[in-house]
Length: 411
Image 1 (cartoon, rainbow, N blue to C red):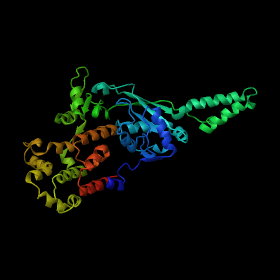
Image 2: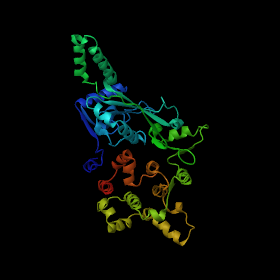
Image 3: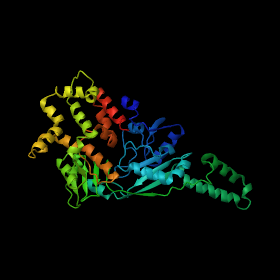
């Protein structure tokens, strides 16, 4: 990952945590019912998730009580606007934006000397079967301060009232109680520590529950797409819910998404776009072995591209150029079928969210499409960074350079 780090493309916006902040983070973990970390320094993202703590805990979802009960931690106002690097739901970043937009000023004050635990309450204690994700409707975002600071503030105010009553101002015991409270927690009298719960409504979304599930509920008919085969097999046994259920590897899924006006593919338009060039070059790169030139140069130089295109096997050459071959044949006759000429995964990779979709839905469908056919390296980085990082580890060093260049040129 060193090349990605040097290019500021690998978790470059994490916030460093050390000293007192580690102590507060541990108090949040304990308040939420989790094991405290033994690390003395680490990094966190916008929702309070830390890759170092996840590695220590050997659990990337260490802030969850099962699939149905995710949590978050705020220990710094610097978390405002930061990425959520491992979102459990596709809407996690929007929830955090809602939190900071509503309570930003109070968060600035509270995190001076305290920290905030967040409970994303879906009113679901536990998931029992895959179609339980249909219960997702709205989320109540609830807050708790470490050290039970709200109650401490109430106790401190009661002490002040007691101090002002009758001749209590000369009572040394009350003096000492006030001093002890102030030394431990500071003067809380004028501080607003009340964070009222927030409401967040969900529509279509992705969740990592059950191995990864897409719920598309704002279209002609609800569609559920499972990434995990076992969860899919369990879900299709259901006879109660009126939903369409697919596994992400089913070819019929793409046709159904087109029928429901969720995705589209205009090949004559797409071949003129940078998306197509990236995908075509990705396909060629998969066939290149023991090259005399760096893969980055082959993909960037049109002469080298043609040279190596002619060196690979004829069957592979046709696969790289299959879309253009198909369009050429189509000009002569409409008798040709795309499935006879263009590789299925190549064709699927060229699909786009339908132009009629809202920006929120477009992002979700982009993520679904890149998971169906992960051939556009830029979109894979944008919409599924964890999968991108996994794939990146398997690539040739020179191909990595080309990929980094594509991303840097599109930031």
